[in-house]
Image (cartoon, rainbow, N blue to C red; front, top):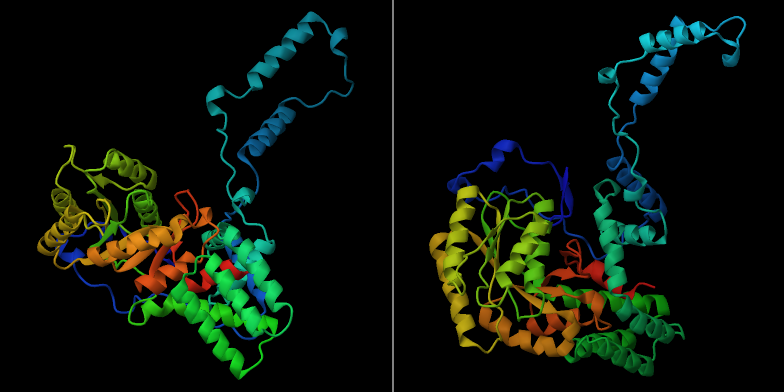
Amino acid sequence: MAFNWFRRTFEQAEPATAQEQSPDSASKTAPADAQPLQPTSQPVVNTDLLSWAKAAYTNIQHKQAVPVPEAMPEQVASETSETTEEAHNPPPSEAVPFWMQSAEQIQARVAELSANALPEESAVEPQPVVGKVNKKSLLAFDQEFLWSAEVLAKQGRKPEDISAEEITWLNRLRVGLGKTRLSLVNQLKGLVGMGPLSADAVEDIEALLLQADVGVQATDRIIQTLQDKLRAEVLPPAEAIAYLKQLLRETLDAPLANRSPYLIPVKNQLNIWLITGVNGAGKTTTIGKLARLAVKSGYKTLIAAADTFRAAAVDQVKTWGDRSGVEVIANPVPNADPAAVVFDAINSAQARGTELLLVDTAGRLQNKKNLMDELSKIRRIIDKKADHAIVESLLVLDATLGQNGLRQAEVFAQSAGVGGIILTKLDGTARGGVAIAVVQQLQLPIRFIGAGEGIEDMRPFSSYEFVEALLSG
């Protein structure tokens, strides 16, 4: 079974006949029951987390284990050879030392051994050890595993549905947000640890949020709500942290009021994702990581190299295509028309029954009119060639730029008709709170986040997991 990262669940692999679809069948809608898993932000009540974690760990071990044979072929061959030799050569009643034997006896013994020796062609080929658990691939049942298991359990997940990759990703996300957490959580706990929150403590929390690049608008909203809560009741330290987490989750989930919590490509239908962003934000790298994620989740994927004006952009996306195992449709002519590349890519996608087409678009500065004209032309080509396709435009944003990058992205998002954000390089900044500022100011949901440079370091965004990784002790 393949783990579908977009739905966060295991799915059966499609039969071979499903890989050969006609363009007509590729445009059909997905089954009505194909709904994403929607985690709840409320903790699971009366759950034995340790037992849950043990059950999840056992299931992960079971998925990574294979049965071991009773005996290795080499051992069987060796035992057979020894048995045969003993049958042909019973031990003498009185052993005669080799140096006391005559030349005739020695020659006779050598001839006898040669006659009973196995021919080379009948030797058993060494076989790989099957069934033993690959200990290096297994996760350790340690504090990191327990923390990840708790985060998943409190979202209503079942132990049998957890994958080793989810545990690894949550640990990676927590490490990636480590710089922000060290500067924010320690001081925050110092404030709430002194007792019920006072007005002065709330002001200090406001300063901490601004330092983490949460943004003025989001900070004002959070602090105002927190003050209203304090006027109604006294908050002990633990409840204060829990309430702050709730406020952050509500802010991150606000743009999802009328949308699905996850961006999921529809199976057996062409989905086209336009990846936009300012040069240097990690746009091309993001495409390679998304392609890898889609392939692992069981989607037939294709990449269109439509950023034809930036030097080496096409070569770069081809490199990432090779790494992710996805073919790249490109025009070998320098400075080729991006819309023509998309046209060719759609033809290829329809002929192959592709389910997800990732389009690398130009990444000039947001005030360039030519960029907007190119994006509009690409959209017209898509509407004409693939009118049944599900089209999504995603903006790649570099988290390390903080508020500066956000101001650039604000104009870019409005001009390009963006429907979601991909936040990259969260592991390289102490201002991970910029994710909250992005949602508050752009009023767009974060769809994916990157917390590392590896090809596996990008996953769908979950507000619950993000806030827990940000504010965990």
